[in-house]
Image 1 (cartoon, rainbow, N blue to C red):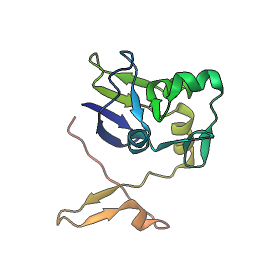
Image 2: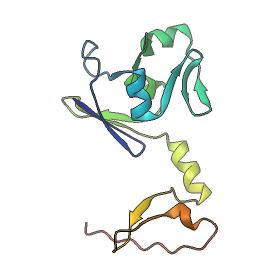
Image 3: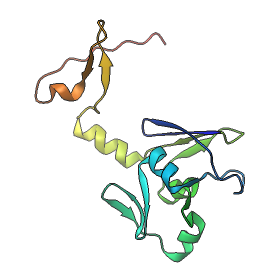
Image 4: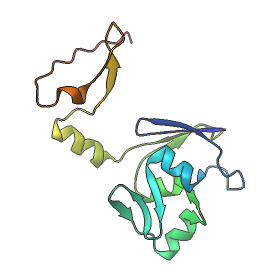
Length: 138
């Protein structure tokens, strides 16, 4: 079993073990669940963004309905790392994506319980001024 961490998602998957060591190959359903990317005839897509794959890169990234996720991340210029046993993979976001979110000054939505256990989402307060106080022991 392999754990894939990507954009706030954590998923345990069964990768294609017949592939070379150091590569993460997932079937199309696991790719979508782990990363939000879809395999389509026109290429690999995330929402409205599609990355067309010319024949050379396509053969290295797609084999039937199985996708070389590690190769895709490298093709996109995004950071990727795994532990020594390749049982945990971290798929990072591109620096320009993080930078544009920071420049927007809009906080990502999240949901947390209050002391009585009632859930509150940041999006519940859109259009209102919100003061966020955080604390960590580390």
